[in-house]
Image 1 (cartoon, helix red, strand yellow):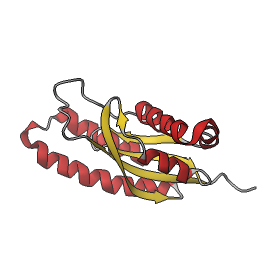
Image 2: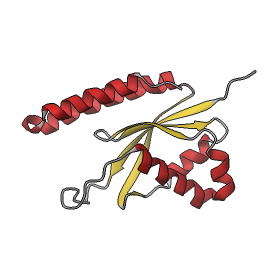
Image 3: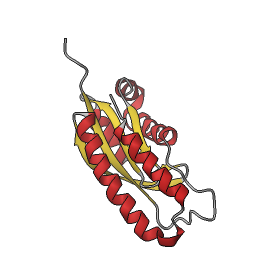
Image 4: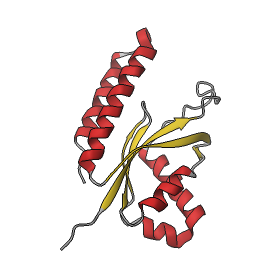
Length: 154
């Protein structure tokens, strides 16, 4: 018996820099709102049949709200449809977004390693930009995110 084949996409989410996030409610990228936006895009662009065929293995495995990096799982047969739908997502919670594919792999282990490298580099960059405003709470949150990646499984 052959195991179920998946593809793992490491994506980066860019929020619209022209939108002033401090004035209104801050947009926090979560697994729920990211998953909902992608499913809505699949439904809009590929219809109910396309959505149904993509959902059997579709899952947002990991989201880091600080670095805006996420891991998305899709079946090997449907990953191109999911990827195309992700590129057509234009907003999450009424905030314009753009997605960038950082890595595409056939195993969670390879994707996890790429996510760790990416998040560690982005955390270092975040620390430099935040400087003295960096709180111990946000440092703890960053460490928790790195631990969360290390614990990812199928």
